[in-house]
Length: 317
Figure 1 (cartoon, helix red, strand yellow):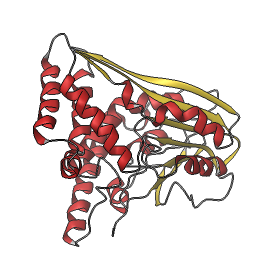
Figure 2 (cartoon, rainbow, N blue to C red):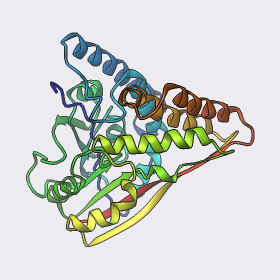
Figure 3 (cartoon, helix red, strand yellow):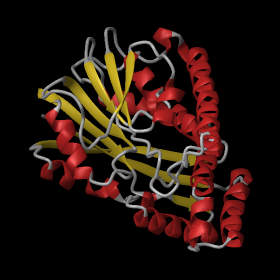
């Protein structure tokens, strides 16, 4: 395949006794929205350009693809999840941070703004995604592979990956590389999926069937949507002795601020894999439509609720 477009999604930051001071200090929500909109439009232009050059995007290695609708979904997911993740990282002033798998670059920008003097290097495999990132204060984006990070040993105070390990060919090797480039006493963090933990009520049986198919299909592509449950073992096998686990909850109900956005995000997950799953013959279009229809109705069901947790690990180098 001409273009390896599997997005990496790792970010690194440093933690100390200082707590998160928020994103508003460097321009606030209005600036963030402008950057997200610019990233999405740049991604759309990049994808159109790649197609014009006859290059095929990596639809059969990364389950979600890099279509404009997917970029919009990822921007929305950043808005929902970045603040809690940055609080988990507890970024210290003056930190040198490595993000592996930058995607649209939104999280890297927020990490750089979390404390004074923070410098973030964002590694991303996809050239199209790097083009979409644009220029961001305190952040440098470079093209690279999580399996072979092009940095000297002990280069960073904090290295992190978010929503990345489920997509790489060898998660253990990626973690060993993250450990190698972290200074002694520095921190390595990850946040990942275990998609089996997702629950909706009232029950959505058509969605449940499609979600199981989605998970199995991802495994045929070399991904692992259940990897979150294995984080402790993966970190220990990568050479870390001091590892702590935690979760980042997503608890939403009809009328709560994030409810409709969260359900819409899950619909976007299915839609991003629609062409691939139908093309592979693992699900019929009618069944997929039924699954999406259930969730669309759930958005307006005044008895509806959703529960999920992200799996997280933090280790000392």
